[in-house]
Length: 501
Image 1 (cartoon, helix red, strand yellow):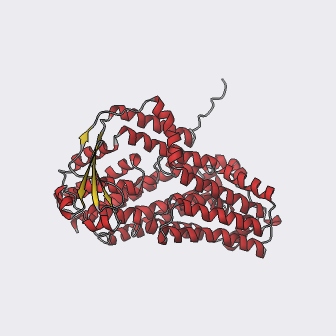
Image 2: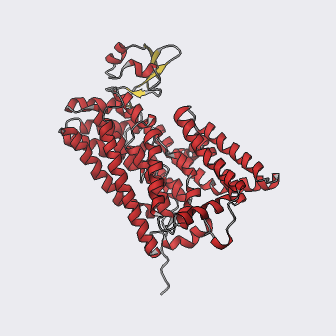
Image 3: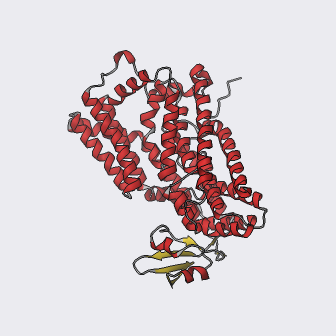
């Protein structure tokens, strides 16, 4: 008998297409429906209520909000704290079905790429910049120096990366931007004799626990609190506790796995891919390393400065993808001049670097295409409506934990944290009043649910992250699911304590 060929888990692209097909099928099974939307116009100081194809202009007053049972202060709209249209409670209505057929299914990833063009450009330009820095040998020299300094204390690398990324996640929602970190940090983790999974975990789980327990994140905590009609500082203490305990659990979990791999490389979940990964990120020959000259130090300084400039611009100057991408393009040009790369060499290395991240860019676009199918099929509001109906009559402790679990499920269909906040919080926050608990607990349940599912959410950016080292989604699930369970238990304990104490 011939040897049975072992079936491999599908690639990230195929997984996303399977999910897209499942979502398209749901649009045939789940009734279409929608809440009315309320948008504020700063130019005319009016509200625009949209119901199906009908739009009605209303005065932008607190009385209007009260009549619509939207329990949000008018100032939240006028100051720009709430800039997206919100759902109006009690206005859900079923609509004529919009099932998504074969043509819609085929067009969805293309529309997703079109709608994600800014982040795709960011990824490709970062790839080009990395190609230019690689051409100077600066990464090679810098990684070797860091590996020598951390020899015997490599675990510090895990703590440092996870803490810093979590800090970015909890303060300004560092998430998509982390794509830029993997090609740089993976060789460092490999030089420390860990596997690539340890690097992915430190960055991605660090970002996830930071956004899960957001403190001053404007795209999560602040916009959700505003949509719930409360101050964002309410519930802050509980979230700080969640952040601290969650970080400890995550760091211990990653470090335990990392030390096991370091002692015995065959214990790695991706041990069978070690040769494949080494081809993508070749091991550094310490005997033939390029000296870290002043020029190479300057190259690394410019490269590192990009991230500090990006963080400052996003958090303080209101930058978004276009401005961030411009920073990385400018850095590539400047480094090319400093390294004295001729025009042909520069273009070749830049294009090769961009080509290496082209697969990641397509994954981002395909994932967005899944959201396009749900929006066109108009099923997201239906799921929200039935979820709110299901939880509205529960006891306090059960209610808040079911709401948390509900948010983990809704995140699959609405992966945007800010989009989730403005669509669901006007509906869910009043339910907290009806069972006699604080609205800040509903904000926390939203954050914990969204942040927890992001760790394994295939419609998020985890598949794009894994694609950088060709790690299968099944390997990530095997690594991450026990941690997800631990964090879920922690979240439920914190929420339950918040209800009764």
